[in-house]
Image (cartoon, rainbow, N blue to C red; front, side, top):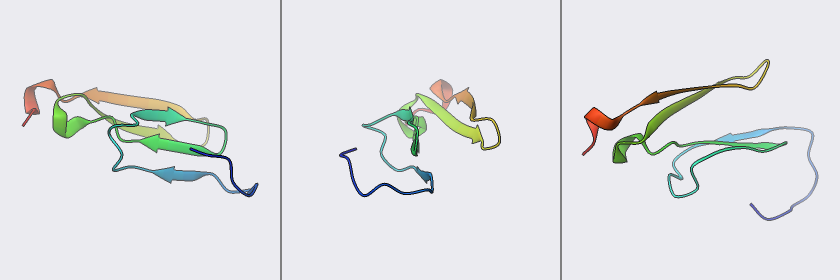
Length: 60
C-alpha cells in the first residue's frame, strides 16, 4: 500500500486475496484466499492476535 496522509485509525480490509494477509502498523489485510483453498483469517483487535483456519477442503 503506498504511503498516504498519516492517520490515527487502523484500516482493516479484505477482498484482496492477491495481497494476502498483511498486518501493517496502520493497515490490516485479512483476505487469506479461502475461496482459492488457502485460509480464512481473523484478528483479535485488542492484541493483534491472528487466527487462521485452512480452507483446503472447501476449494472451488
